[in-house]
Image 1 (spheres, helix red, strand yellow):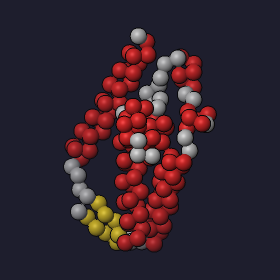
Image 2 (cartoon, one colour):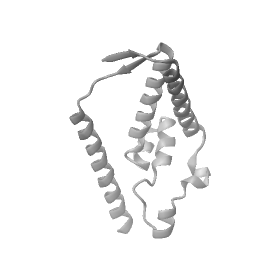
Image 3 (cartoon, helix red, strand yellow):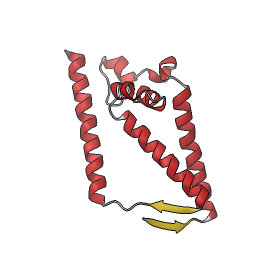
Image 4 (tube, one colour):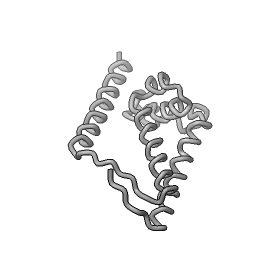
Amino acid sequence: MIITKLKTDQRLVRFFLAGILFSIISLSIYFDPVNYSISECAIKQITGYSCPSCGLTRSFHAGANLNITQAFAFHIIGPLILLGVVILFLKFSIETVIGKTVQIKIKRLYIKITFLLIGIIWLVFWIWRFILEIS
């Protein structure tokens, strides 16, 4: 683990980023996308088929309200993105409070493999959904 002291402007940036992430999480809890036009996918309206990101907003909302099963049903990647947002919020909040960066060293290869796996899962999920929609 690497810990370095933050300058005042760096702490301010982290405070601002934590605030943005907190706002995203809060809005996801309180605003159901089904009740707003944001849930209408233009690609699905035009083609009749779901795009790769269809269901992400609803998945994020369900996950933020701890309806994990429903979140995965809307989109398999939604809960993972929400988890990432929560982790970043916690990281920036902690760094703002303690005034130091906290970094855990992870080999680049593991990061690349993780993102590759997420991409493959996302693609397979979209193809699977597409096959279900055309049949």
